[in-house]
Image: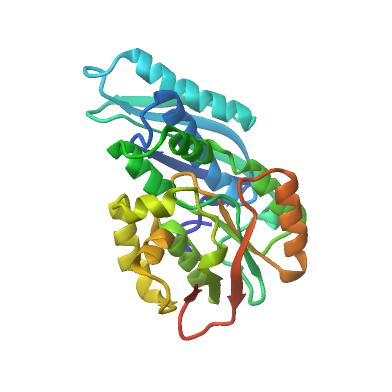
Length: 307
């Protein structure tokens, strides 16, 4: 598997029983604390492996650092955050590469394994499936407010915990239950990653805005102008493929398009299994276990958004 359907990771079959799953992701700081920046970047990179239903095994650090502007202590804290998050995931960091750059950047190239027969893709959603989301939305709005200094320390800490939370338990739960398809919600926002899944699967879907899990204060901050520029780009690019109920405001649409850093898994699960999946997610204390909509046969719009 390569880039054909815009899936989360590449998959290369080694034998009838083992396939390699590979991904890479890195970005500039989304929080001020270097340790938590490292932890969030690691959780984000690992998420692509989890979205494929795979087990991550090894990682290599990718870092860019302004050595003439910041002390090596800052770099050490970034790497320690990544190391601790990898250890939490039972992943071994086996090396990496650092270059000098004007702006800090950090992430990981991650390798995992999966049975070729149990790969979870973004291209197998089926009509009648229910759509389940495992983390609340709004971290793009919150991180914009963090940079602007307009968010409370409590709200900032909640957003940081969400981004640094591994999707491991959510992935293990969906593998145990057996699902149709999955992707993780990151830079394209919920609307972008859902539409990618629908295109790849050749289906449509209906979601309900009222059922979306949101971080506290996210809507209020968005109304105060803290919506990131990426949300406008996502809405412009993907919004044309959606049919919006007239009751939904521009702000509602932007929340669906809010780019997420280390967001949750978006899972397409057969209707007869959705109760089992939600119960298991709640039992394992994922940050959300919200049924947000249903997959349908192909319609006039890829996505219909109800209030």
